[in-house]
Image 1 (cartoon, rainbow, N blue to C red):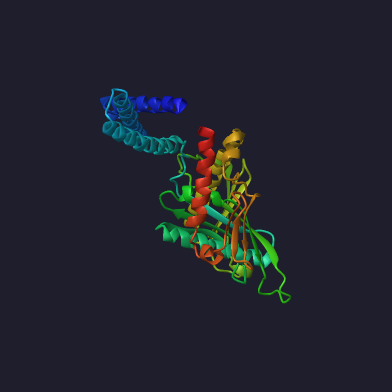
Image 2 (tube, rainbow, N blue to C red):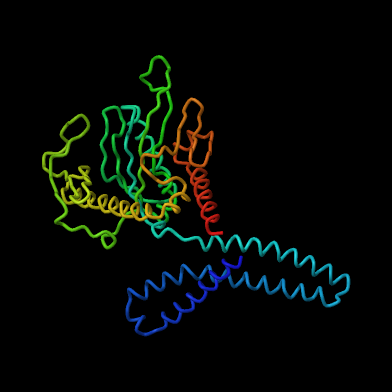
Length: 358
């Protein structure tokens, strides 16, 4: 643990510096700086408190070993050896806790998200499964007490979804759902298939951390904004005014359309929310691409073209290909019971990052 101890000592020194700075009248008068320091203090304090408890265990073990070497009688020696075994167990447990606390946190883990679901290969069957995934994520979010709001949707005439973009607001939403990005494959017999042949269809999911205006500054000159009349499935008119909004970000070519609201102003605000999230995602992807080793340590790359999971209806199973996990609880998962899947993915990610830390 020598390298980890050095890092822990550095963290303790940093916390002491922050405490001193937070007591400086000049810092107290600068609310933005004070809040940044307060957040850093809240992040580092649990690490330092655990490290100090760990040092007490090391100190107790040293004192107990000294007692063993001071000519103690048999009873005292037996007690001391039992105490050393107990301290060794506590030390090992606390070392694991410290390694986890030292893992670098993703700065966007606590953010709300924009979740995009798009039907891929498979026509109507893909669109129907896309609708089921929208329902699955919505039910999971509701079970967590999070708020779900549809931002944009394009439906098919048979109850399917070509594309759905919705926001999920709740603490830790990104940390819980970030491993869902990628291609989801479904294998089942469509209702329209008379011969009973299994079809394979795909749906693409993208999970984007929501971006604040201060994080992603968009120059109005870089935008082309078009308004048009919104339409429903099959081209039927659902609005008699030009309330639908299409925003094109000229430097990247990104296009976002919103037509779910009757107000042009609300559609524009929702479209900008999606655009900022996509631009933040693009910037993060470019930054991470520079650190290829870090990307290899993740549970998959989160690439939209990467096949991450298969939902097999005939066998009632769900397989996550990134960690080789198969669960025979397909219906419960589609009802939004994602805790086991998410827990396994997060655990694998932590284990991989711990290997790199060690």
